[in-house]
Length: 228
Length: 297
Image (cartoon, rainbow over all chains, first blue to last red; front, top):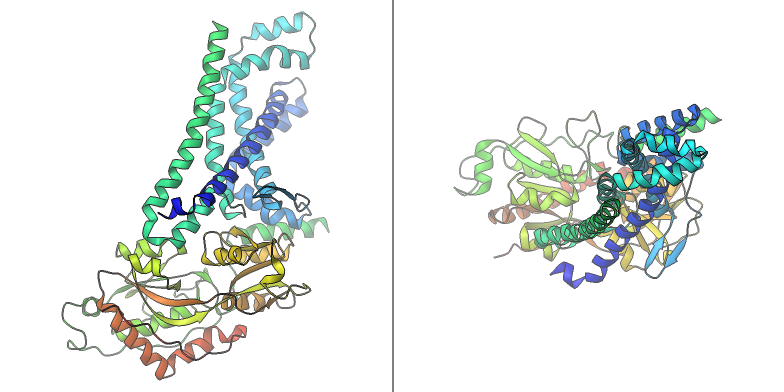
């Protein structure tokens, strides 16, 4: 069978999918947290900026974000050609950089909104009490509100990250040899095994998503136990 | 300056979105005027697929829409143009169908990924979509020909020192995701990076993200002609692709008929004429017609 005969290629392709997910996933959590702090914060300009960003990024199809960083950004002088890291059989170059930035900017708007639902779930009294003991806004957020908000928003955050895992497939046509690109190479070379190839690659995605779901479920249980 | 750069960026984005589909090479020609032949009942064996199509008077043909010179359809075109399309027209005319009548001939866009499924499901009767003949494809569909032999070359900026694929070992070379071309790039020791279409790769070569792109020389010649002075085709052909006609395995009688029409076109000069009209303008010399494969017994 084509996939088993070329299993190293299969693993390498899912390796790229995995790296895209991990790097963009962590960065989008970071940026999303900053965005939500801006959105619920006391400074009107930042609130406005974060709201505008979320509206723009969330309402733009991902493939257009990719196309922007692939075709329009280089004309404006924004390139990722400085990125040139090689680890083992993996090459992280301009294409990987552009893909990570596109995925991060897109996903962080969803992370922001998932977290905001968590912030809204924290009783107002918590923030008021934190302010009453003299904590500044930064302290209120990092010490009191965000930790509770994170726990409350684990299910929607997990959904956002699962969507990210599958969204990495857009990078297939923007220069990254990840799983979907490899699948297309296989179906081109082994036209007679099309169905088996589809199933093999669907399985790969299912395994990654299931592993991640299990992780989020574990976190959810732990926090529920801690809260009880 | 700012505004100009912004406009350039906007233009690049539009191009990427396929909204500003361009393609001077091959798309400005009308194509050959191919007249439908008179077909009487005895021409095709009764019950054969050819007789059925001739009787019905309509045919579905799969071609590419995005390869200038081979199979290309601009936003305002009724009929695609290119060498693949010209060969398809000769086949269609032999069935007694007028190739220029879009109510009789249904041109279907087949991308690399759906050529076999479209033939297997009967969505198209014939595929002429820069369709390389391979043993693995012959397991699931019928392929005959070749009517064209091409090979892969390299397209680089006009001021590049690169002379062939051998100068690009370990470097990134652009081609279409999942295509045979990208396999050949990897086999040659370079690193293939995939985009959705060849015109997007041209963009990446022009903006310097990759130093070269590679696919069939005939396609590259079209892009070099479009960007004269900025891009050039270099190196010898480092692969051989035999471009053939695809048909369904359920209709093996099509093979002899296709070969018959092709050899007729080789002999009477219509093949060479189609070649000069479509691939000639981008500087490809008309070769000798290739030798046809035998049909499976």
